[in-house]
Length: 496
Image (cartoon, rainbow, N blue to C red; front, top):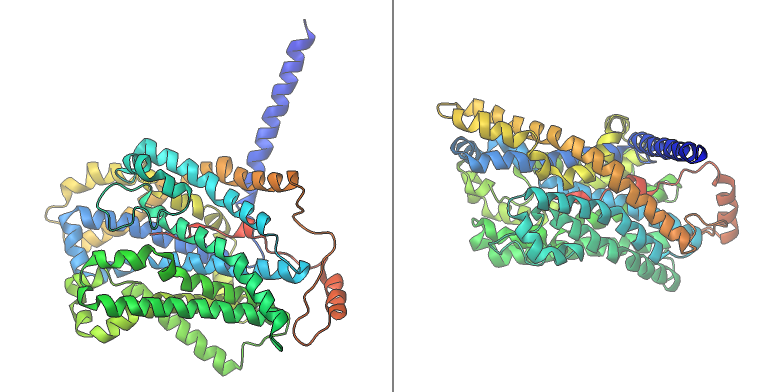
């Protein structure tokens, strides 16, 4: 009789210790940095930008003073252009996955497509499902409960950027999760693209595997530009109507250019680090860097699609330059992807030390790790701080406030929203998101798939034979740090 209570006590203590170790490891993983540390800062910045856009626009559209500020545009242009953060997410996903798949193909001569899809699903779906259930309970965003009951199947199949579509005036399930569908659809298309590139490199003379990937991804980028140009020239008379922008805003075929640019950048970074490709002369690098900065500054001021700019009093001048407006509408997001990708390549190859030092700072690591959960739970987080403050202390006191005071309030809303979302994101990461990634690895282990092969094979770069590459790989294998896309890549990307 005396043995059983002692046994139960010991078992309870072991379980408690195991739980504490699990949370401790999860907390430490928040501070882990991958091989490309600049990606952490860029991902964290993209998350803050997108979430700030949603929180700020809620204040702007809900109050008379907010609408007055929005009509002026320029005081809040940086806040209202946060949809560009989606493009940054897409570039980062392409950059990290592109480089990881290229290394896998170069190592094994093939891609384990099943493992890739399993890891992607367990990386995205568990946290997504948990956030959706909480959003249904809180009914945030508004009418999420009704929308998920009606259209939840589209979310689970990652088709909610097409079904029911943003042109439908009715309830939607997790309205901001359309970008997760875009990313997952791009994930599905990535391994076949690499398989085609490998086949081309084997059949076409003087075309290496890296060159084949670069050409194919460049073709995808160009197709996206042409599709966007066709849309603009078809709908240019209706450009002042915001609903016209719904299709290019959420459709994968209109948003795939930044991801394709990221894939190119991921391969280019590997090739440049290996000394097989060059970034060109110093003058060329300086010119490309200046071009990239100009594109990104323009995105901060004018946004991706000028949905709100052209409807505001502050953007009346923009409509007068309609040719420029149409060209920017068509090419802006592809160019944003191109500019961001180039900056990532020069940072990864050590040619942008200041960029690397800022975005690679260790303080960005937890922000990047929590970015997916922060993005998913942002509307639920509003209920903790932002909405109570807005409803109880702000709305009734806006009468007589100046525009300057309104601008300050508009920029305070995102701060409250982020602070309110943070505890939910930490819990979701520790309990669900990280657990999902660990479960995915266990599933692959149960199925007999090795996360890292024992013997590595190398596809020779152009101009080298297999034996030379294998010898070089054996010499460097212990010192090389493989950038795991499970730990460093974030899906949500992307969303607005």
